[in-house]
Length: 225
Image: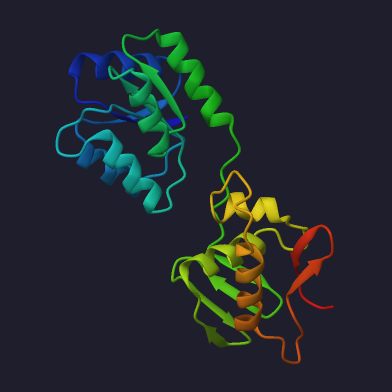
């Protein structure tokens, strides 16, 4: 494996680098977060080993910058910050694994091998399409047959939820939880009202409606019919 180690502690870096090299891996080392980010963006690595507390750019910021740039290389945080909150924060920042210091080298090596065996993550789609309907998640734009459709934030979220489940029946309860974050029935017609308004904005025209009511079940979005 080709591994990038981002660690500012000289003793720890030397120990890890020596052990990984002896195991047959190629190891590059950066002593601060800024250099680590530069190397991670410029070179191709199988796995990154990153400390949390780094000079110039901390480990969390480094990983967030990588993920924001679309970098999917597996990351293992190797750090003395081992509280539950620290681990959760690190994983939510985009890390794939978390190992606390002090650590056993055998465990570090096993975790890195496991990360390298994982199939690469597919980049998440940023364009959703159903028939002639297109949603650009980055630009937050919706068009149908080239016509721009202006949606309110909740309408956009509702349409995204449906489009991600093209051809699947989506129940009212699923929409309440997935779009409104309700885990109870508010006993209102909020779902029906928003679906009706969304249908009106999408239009039917010659291509026909896209959102279909499945009586007694829910809704489904699909082209045709």
